[in-house]
Image (cartoon, rainbow, N blue to C red; front, side):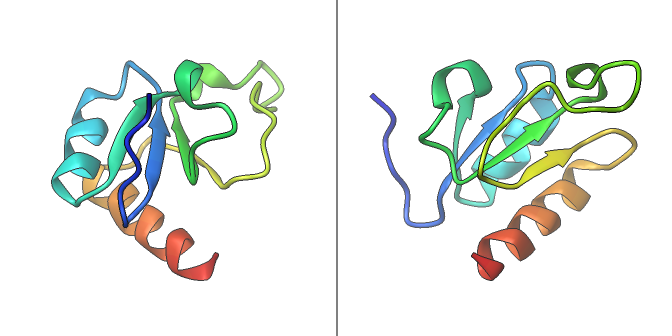
Length: 86
């Protein structure tokens, strides 16, 4: 069962360990993308989650952030912004 946090639940690709840790430190619940379909407030993917034409392989109604070329701090800041805009 996914524990809900006041800040929100963020689904993160398993390969993004540093971003998972940064989001946890910022007060978010972090879950694997495979576990969180329909339960997450936002998703963070790596570049390998897009196909050759740059199209994301994930379809969802929540914000999907691509971590390619961004630091963990950049992603935390972007998540914070997206969560405020909801």
